[in-house]
Figure (cartoon, rainbow, N blue to C red):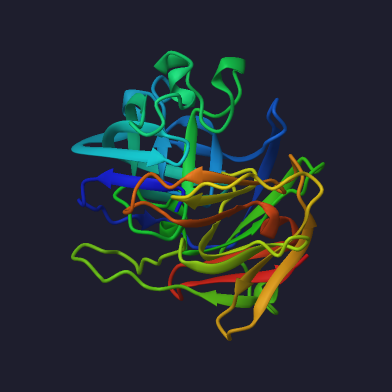
Length: 329
């Protein structure tokens, strides 16, 4: 997965006020370097926060200077997360009433106190500006990015995915390049989920205090192939709205694939069949292919598949069933 989690295993039960269908706008933003980022408007307590939507991590995390003291019920449990970029957020857990559209749930989140870089990536984006000026997802030196991030992955984490407490099924219809808005559909109807082809995920063992099942959404089997040279890399993969293109995490780094190279990415479905798409490597639009140091044997080795699958498919997450469904758009 794109991030390494280091946090207390103390868990809170999220309490949803409703599990009704709701449609939330997903906003698209283009960074100065051409990278695409996505966000939704959250209400945390009484504060409204534009929040990065990230399917490649888990947990709602808010940077300093955003929330009022009365917005959260502070806890004494420390929490830390480290992302693939090297950015490390350190803080504590808190309980908060989080609203997304008409859905509200009381969930554990991380209140960030300090921001730093991992030892392996000391020149990460957090090294460029003071902590008070740091933003997630963009270039903070340019004032790009977000003061909060909501990871909606399916893993277990003390700072939980709020969408699980809001019903546990969500459909991501991401804006394509050139589109300003898409849709995050909470608890979609049966009609909206017909015809999806499912990927089955491996379940994590149950632990005391779990309020739902948790799944290895970074263990989807994928293959990335360069069609002109037949270079291929296969293995654990994750779909990630927080990554602008393909990142191959490996110990032995190789040259990034050149712009214009014909390529194909495929995923293995629950029935053993393959589903994927052809593309030409480019610097933008989710189409670059870059190699990154995997940061050691215990960290993720595989393919962060970024955005491309979302551009061609609506993607359905079902926390109870442990599936990710794809339907061509």
